[in-house]
Length: 384
Image 1 (cartoon, helix red, strand yellow):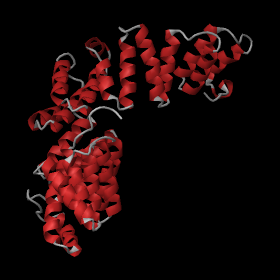
Image 2 (cartoon, helix red, strand yellow):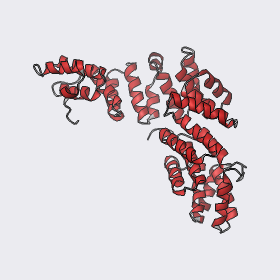
Image 3 (cartoon, helix red, strand yellow):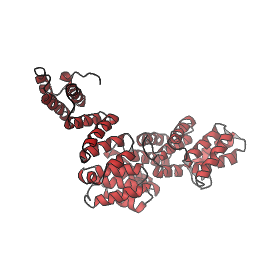
Image 4 (cartoon, helix red, strand yellow):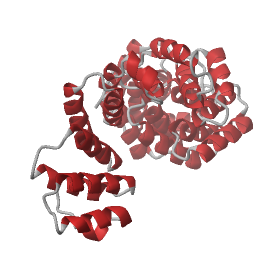
């Protein structure tokens, strides 16, 4: 660790304690008290430097190890935090607070399987927020029914938990349980996930203005909420404002990280805008997450046609429709190949009418398909 001038950066109480250390530099109790004070005062870098000072004299006790893990969490050093909490849990496997902190660290590392495993029933019952964390981990893993069962069980003991209800609304809509999603969305009140779910349902019902109002409320409560960003982007796409839509959907994809549907949605928006390099970059991100997602192969097939890579387009189209015969991207690429017949201008004419005209074997427009991808796009199982 880089050396930190603890005295210069420390706030009031911890600074006073550090001053005492100048007269008694090996006083472990004083070092520990100063580290705890620095954490209380929002100075994790000072606390970590003090704990390094302690560790140079003697092994850190469990209380300071826990403090070290929390300091690492506050600094966004999730791998370091997980290492600390794993060591603590090995020594005390029944410590629910340590289990929760380890699960949080693993979730931030996108190790959702690891997070789910460490959150046992006693931890879920004992630690506020543990149920929400496990529901979200199960959601990322695609274990939607299990997430809903856990949430329903926990709501029996904490029915007013808006954060949990909002998380369950998001799970339900991805599970295709529309009535359940609507019920949870309403019950979540001003929770961003609940509002985003209601916004997606309104968008699916073609109530675009209502959906935008709901997404704006969600973003007012949580400006970085990925579902609200995605939903607002899809709603803007429905209004014809493709450029603004692309910005929102891109931000959503970055926030989601491993959500295939949002990267595919972003790819189609840039395709509609005619920015083919940007479109390909988004589809390639989706491909890196999962090369068996039909819509990714279909989108890349359509781009191959634009780039004149006709044989590659034919191969990708076959793969896309083999993976899912109702694949929108595959249907669009097939229609382009049929129109193209060796003439690239034909593909351009298809692109220009794609947003509002029914295209492909399933009769959808790109706007309709993009909205579907955003609502039901898959999340890569597991971690990084």
